[in-house]
Image 1 (spheres, rainbow, N blue to C red):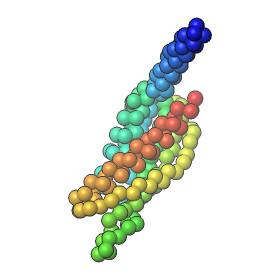
Image 2: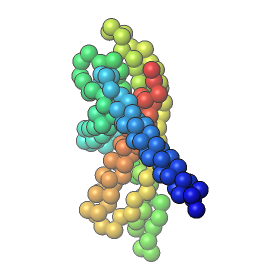
Image 3: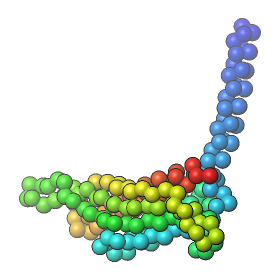
Image 4: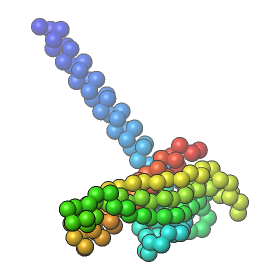
Amino acid sequence: MGTKKTCKYYYLILLIVLFACSTEIKRLEEKNLAGKLIRVDVNNSSYEVGITHIFKNVIETDIIKRGGNVTEIGENIKISVDIIEIKSDPISFDKRDVANIYNLTVKANIKIYAVDKDKENILKNFRLTPNYNYEVKGLTDGELKRQLSIEKAAHEISSIIISNLVIMP
């Protein structure tokens, strides 16, 4: 009977230690861009109007959430996002040959530079092409779903940029 009671206490102590360690690791992960001055430039080369601010706001918000500082001058790191193309292609049709499901594709070139005394050294250069499907039930519904898909693509691009920033020295 005594060994069962002792075993319960050991499990309780082990649980407390694991919980304490996991919260410390999470706290370190959340603020892993602390002290970095980062500038975000978004260039829209597509024909889509008004998406520059969406991508810039999403990326800057994610940087701030991770403890980084967003600046326009005096940066340590510069992120350049060039949105090449945003395209919606129909992938499903209803009985009247009207498209009701679309595939949204966003093509973007991303460059991350280390800025050192007015000189930029490229650290990463990659291309992303997130794809999202959205269903259209009406004209206004279609535009709303398309905008939500563009925001999802911006969040995906931002998360990949942040993950690349985190592993950089």
